[in-house]
Amino acid sequence: MLLHTGLVILAYLAGSLASAVIVCKIMGLEDPREQGSGNPGTTNVLRLHGRTAALLTLCGDVLKGALPVLLLRYVQAPDVFVAAAGLAAFSGHLYPLFFGFRGGKGVATLLGVLLAFHWLLGAAFIMTWLLVALLSRYSSLAAITAALLAPVYCWLMLPSPYLVAGTGLMSAILIWRHRSNIKNLLAGKENKISL
Image (cartoon, rainbow, N blue to C red; front, side):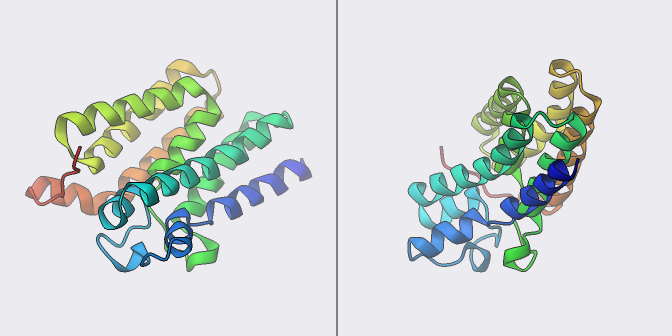
């Protein structure tokens, strides 16, 4: 149990590595927290610095959600610790220790966690996001819709109440983190993505 608890703490530290800030610094680009929406996430990096920086940011954010969960699965931890590791990595992304607790909204990191819970769960999240994004051209609406459905997908696919509860909690937090986007969507002021 001590090992499992330590790995959950490491999951938070892994989540605290702000991929967007690190990628932009390595590439000599301006800090995404100081431009655009101010969100250190894939969408803001895409708008500010293009596809390469955005793709690297996306990969980093997905990996830091997936790897801690996969590590807990590898050591055959109980589902309560697997769910806790996912929540810890997700929380680290939102409130990163190494970057003044100023993080992103957690979409890609949640995706990484869901993929590690079960690849089909992650695939359902991706397909929902893509469908809504293609139809609406709003990244935020796609993320909110995918997050709303993620606990339902998890409940249908996985028998673990801990994983379902963890998914539900992360989804609720993600939607709350999008509250300004929700206001903009309702007011018709939200920025569309270029497909």
